[in-house]
Length: 347
Image 1 (tube, rainbow, N blue to C red):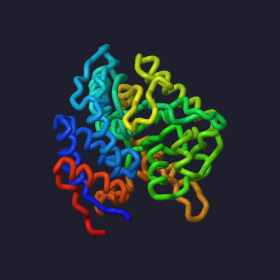
Image 2: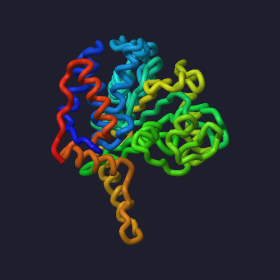
Image 3: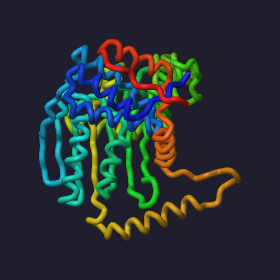
Image 4: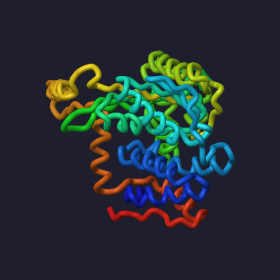
């Protein structure tokens, strides 16, 4: 069963819940906008399903509900922040805004963050940069839940990356991906629904490929492109963890849905290198050339970010579909904190 809810109603509900566990309203707004945008773009594994885990992490004293994000290093075109063990959306958003300011002044802005919890969907930060007519890049490392095929123990996170380019008259070209075949949240959703997962997504605790999501939860996720995806995850781990002095690899505690090692965001001011209108013209030509390439019958070429943009349009009109278990979890929060649950939208 799927329950439809409106985006605004979902935001209001989640904001009230977070404020009940001492999250300041400004931070709650930031976190909620992030979660709901993930749902609107179809990235449900990073959406509102995370809210109960965030709440539990705060209640258990594992997440600081009101972090004081501090600047550790501050240069003309770079900075390093300390997230004070708060939810990552707070520190990562501040890092993104800082990168935008530095890029507007210096052509490029690079900001790292350490000591933060789950930063969520990286496309959120890249989209924020694109609004400033810049190219955006974001990477993050996470708790170990992935290993190369044959390895019985997770040794590295799925360590995602996102890169985006503004496009006039259409959705941005926006790659947002994990270095695993699938996010762990998708496997959890499959387990809740009693569905199998595609072969190649994960291995069981014995290092063997499995299509059983419950066995996958006990085992490891598998990297995209075999050794290539594993190598990319290692690189991101080293940058976000070792370089910034944060947690990395097996130092990050496994099994927490809000675990994060570090975060990096880069903003690149396009008109520092060429006139912005010239860029837009050539980017339109580039996109058009790719999408008009010959294909087999019934095939459409979709650029990175295009599927999510289409889902966003649809869900903005019709509502956000939530799995029954996810909605039940929200209903439990509603009862616990005396907050009205999000209203269901008629299909």
